[in-house]
Length: 67
Image (cartoon, rainbow, N blue to C red; front, side, top):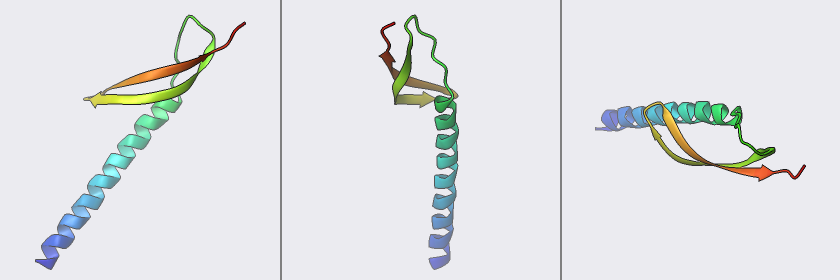
């Protein structure tokens, strides 16, 4: 019984580590993201909406510069 609980705990830890690695990878890709817009500005906020397969849907807030 204890051995089974330990195996389940190790599996849970491994799954958590895998999810964190995936999240870190996606976050790094978002950090390096270049957004092309008809306005000059910079990305102020990225809100994660969902991930399906290899695609990520996000909402991007831009800070617009008056030039």
